[in-house]
Image 1 (tube, rainbow, N blue to C red):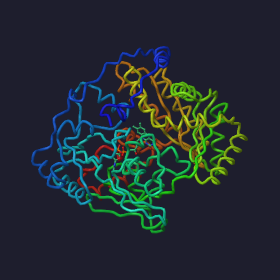
Image 2: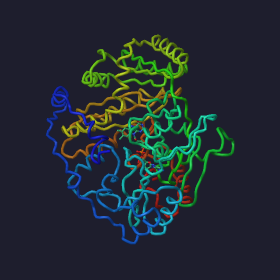
Image 3: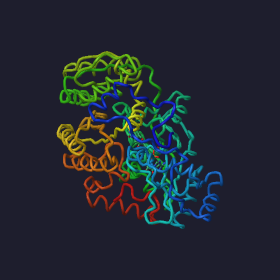
Image 4: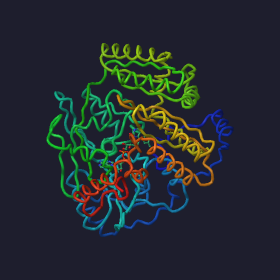
Length: 522
Ligand SMILES: Cc1cc2nc3c(=O)[nH]c(=O)nc-3n(C[C@H](O)[C@H](O)[C@H](O)COP(=O)(O)OP(=O)(O)OC[C@H]3O[C@@H](n4cnc5c(N)ncnc54)[C@H](O)[C@@H]3O)c2cc1C
């Protein structure tokens, strides 16, 4: 993973002359952003960890698994939001964890937490480093230092129970590594967020991630049958049976806990056999309202597509320009919807037919397979485009929310207005990313000129959008999680009493307050 951009440097995308022309005409962006520093030119604030702390950490996890070198601190300085990337590109001194620690098992994690509590050192659990909400900000929270607890060594398939359809996997496995281990045995998890190639199972659980196949395989939190968590107060092994009436489900406390209550070390997940057949079909809908009503009809009828998503008119237009860049798909007018079906040949045929009938009845026109295949082909590539846009002088960032179907139109209008008021002239794209019987999530992409102070410009737009979301009855986050960035809205989300409950749980599990200060809990 690049330290100042997304993903694999070899996959970086050049902007076409057409797109550059569009940026200049629509946003006045002329493609002359100042290049950022090289990794060895970045100025980090000096590490505050003491030699004695390093010695104690090395005794817990082994000398080769502890480092206070700038080359190790820099890649863990934060996540991958646009503000993170803008900060990385800055020549001003930057904050970073004071040391990086890579434990190999639960005993080592427990030992690290104990000595950090004793020495008043904050701990930021680090999975794949793909947080887009400031979840990895190296905050010390008034303590003496902060370490990044990198969990990549927890990378094993511990168990596969084929009878029950469950697998126990290490929290540090990335999406592709977990899928490769399961595929060797003919199984799949089917969790494909856009960050799939780099994010980890522990990160998925800690943030309640949502994949693009969520209409078929569910959100990640729904796949978690059990989990193991190491907290400063002890170890928890949660989730005994597929369902239970033994009081409140404590798994729920740790799903979405974002490293503030404990370190997730392993997850027991529902898995399914690799699909025998896949089918694709794309659709054109005359407008967004007709399109979302069509998706609602499919979801409420339960016809069973694995993927179903809908782009608004603006996003459809931009997708089209991008698809033409990679070649192949026919022209689309109105709003593009994509459906994908998986299962046995018989299941796919039935699910496809029922979905097709429902969509046609709701006003959709079939575009055939090509645009749906093109979407799947390019689905992990979009983040590379953000880097090219930033380099060309355009700010590009995303935000997401969800609400019931009846509130969705008002929510979309309110967020779009908030963003375009805060960033006049900005291009705001939107799609329905996940559907549920009672509602859906909306995912917005904003492209604007970087301007003089892009961090301040985006902070103002984000504040306006967050307030609009809350007022319009949406959730402050459907899948990106809370981190530092959404924390100001947590009391709107769960109420003051809800916040006090979370604080009480934290005080019990983490009395010294070492775990991920400044995130999630106000
Ligand atoms: C380009 C891009 C696309 C994205 N697309 C999606 C998407 O489609 N769907 C989606 O849901 N999200 C998406 N995200 C957001 C992000 O990838 C998810 O939040 C992901 O689940 C984070 O996983 P990670 O392993 O990278 O965790 P990290 O970013 O390393 O950590 C995220 C948070 O979880 C905590 N944490 C990590 N591991 C553990 C652990 N084992 N125990 C306790 N706490 C832990 C961290 O302290 C931090 O607070 C995207 C991000 C980017 C940059």
